[in-house]
Structure formats: C-alpha cells, structure tokens
Amino acid sequence: MTEKPIKKNTINNPKNNNNNNIVKKEIKIENKHILKVKNFFKKIKIKLVGFFKFLQKKNFFNNSTSFLLVFILFFTIISINNKKETVKEKPIIIKTTSDEFNEQFKIKKDFKINSEQFSFYQRIREFDKSHQYYTTIATKNELFTKWIELFDGWRYVLNGDPKYKKADCVGAVYHFLTNGWNSNMYLEDVKSIVGRAKILAKKSELKIRRSKYSIKSGDLIIIQVVKNKPSHAGIVYDVQNNWVRYFDLNIKHRTWGMRSVRWKDWRVYAIYEISLSFWLGDLCSQAREFYKLD
Image (cartoon, rainbow, N blue to C red; front, side):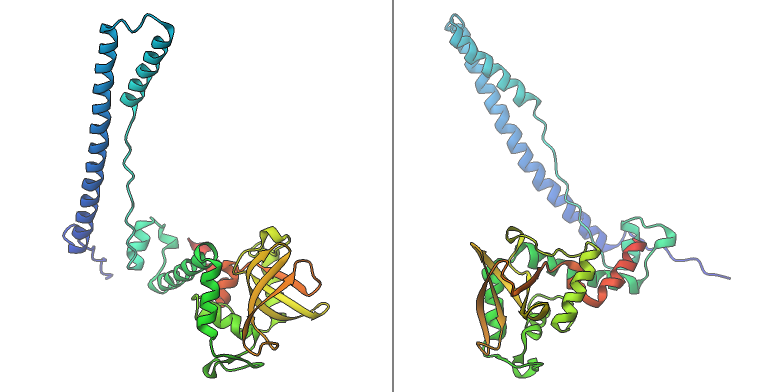
C-alpha cells in the first residue's frame, strides 16, 4: 500500500503567521497614509466650498473673469471628489523549498520541479541578479575601482597563476567578472571567446556593438595586432568623442592600465555586450533546458 502524502498545516505554521502579521502591518501603515491624504483633500474641499459661498455673497459672478475663476474652482472640487486612492499591494514572495515554489507559481503536476532543480533555479537567480547589477546599476567608476582593487600589485604574465598575482589579459577579464562580480563565464583564450560570442549573437543572446552610441561601460573589447587575428581583451570604461577607453592587463605596462583606441580603428576587432548567456558560461545550456519546464 502506498502512503498518502501528509499535508502540511499551513494555518498553524508560526512562519506563515509571522508573514501574515508583516503583511497586516504593512497594510495598516499604507492605510494611515491614505487617510492622511483623504483628510487633506477634504480640508481643501471645505475651504473651496466656503470660498465659493463667500463669492456668491459678494456678487462676484457679475463679470466674465470672475465667472471663469469660479468655473475653474468648481471643476477642481469635482476632480478632488472623484479622485480614487489605490493601494499598491507588494507581493511577498517566499521561496524556500521546491514544494512551496510549485504551489506559489501553480506549476502543473507534470512540470513540477524537484529539490535538485530548485537549487539549480536558485543558482541561476543569483547569477541573474549579479548580471543585472553589473549591466544596469554599476557605474563606470565603480567598475574601474573594482579593477584597481583586484589587480593592484599584479603582473602581466602569459597564462599566469592568479594565486601569485599573475595573469594575462583573458585571465584578468575572467578574474574580474567571476571573483569581482560573481559571474560564471568560461576561462578560455581570445579566439574561443570570439567564437562563443558569434554563436550567441546568431541566437540573439548577445549583441555586437555596431555603433559607438550603443557601447556601454563594462562591455568586452577585443583587440587585434594582426588583421583578423584577435589577440587581446579588455573591459570598456567609456567612449569620449571617437575614442573608446578601456582597462586591461597588458604587456606594455606589465600590469593593469587604462588605454584608448579610436572607434572604427582596424585594431578594434569587436566590442561585445556581456549578456546573461555569456555571463552564465557552462550553465547557459542547462538554463535553457530548465526554463523549458517552467
């Protein structure tokens, strides 16, 4: 005989009670603010009505200008009277287990996720949050400051070991995005990065910057010393007139530095958006399969 699954008593659960209390407190606070607004509008309405009666006593309706003023006041009263206050309810999303997740989003029986899939979902969410911060919130100065903090005292060495504060250009970009900004990108050479970016671009999962106006701080710049042979990588700082400024770990300085190159210069092989698919690295294909079930 198969045992019937035991249903959790959500009513007597102290966690749920605490959450309900929090929601009630938030609604009470919002209601207080709404009452204050309503009382404020009531006072204005009373004053306007009193002023309207005062004008009637003083025969203020005789000339056209005074009539226009009263007409405006009349419609102001109507607009205040018809004004409706709306309460914006902030949904409190609590995702602690796969069962609660399935129940909350009402996922059908055939597509319910298990605990292993749920932990994977949480990982993807964390990478998504860090990617959003990097691409939409972090300023160019914040990016550059993080670069200096990470690579202060480092030396440029081809295939260098980060344990000894040594790295090449690609190793520096990898260390910057993973340890500095919590990405999961691949550690690979420049040629492989270009190949991956082209594949993602074909799938519309990454943008290649075609115009200087589309370039953003934090983009990945690829430099070539020999035509059609990309060999260097850095992070875009900004664009000043026709000059793209970027920071990197390079042979010339033997450490980190800020450099610039003219937009459309033949040395600029490409500038890529650091998209979410690029950010996720080897989790990208798994994420695609996972979201098919969602």
